[in-house]
Amino acid sequence: MLSRIPINMGKIKKEHIDKEILRVAIIAELDAVNLYEEMAAMTEDEDLKEILLDVAREEKTHVGEFQTLLLKRDPEQVAELEKGRKEVEG
Image 1: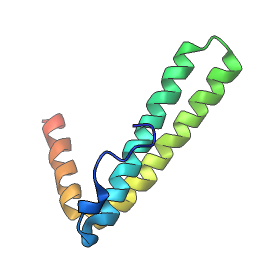
Image 2 (image 1 turned 45 degrees about the vertical axis):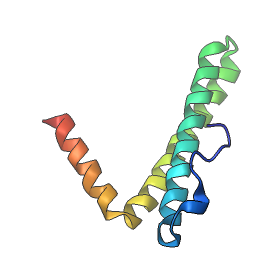
Image 3 (image 1 turned 90 degrees about the horizontal axis):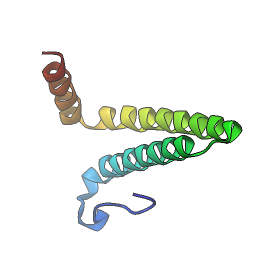
Image 4 (image 1 turned 60 degrees about the horizontal axis):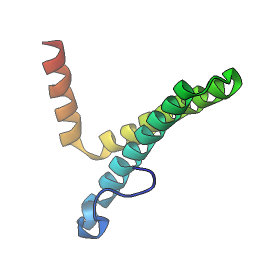
């Protein structure tokens, strides 16, 4: 993603904009996790690797923060996550 919003936010209804902002924020954080983990895998500098992996973990915390807010605002998302969990476990 690297700083590009993947949808036209101007076409989103006002009552849904915050949910879409949260989804884009989650995408951005997951993108950052992937980037930092990729760079950590590429470097041989152990200090740099440690910092990159620490920052990646922080980004995962941010995903959790945004997801928590999204789940408070979108009951359908809650239901679909639960369906997905059951499908994986079943």
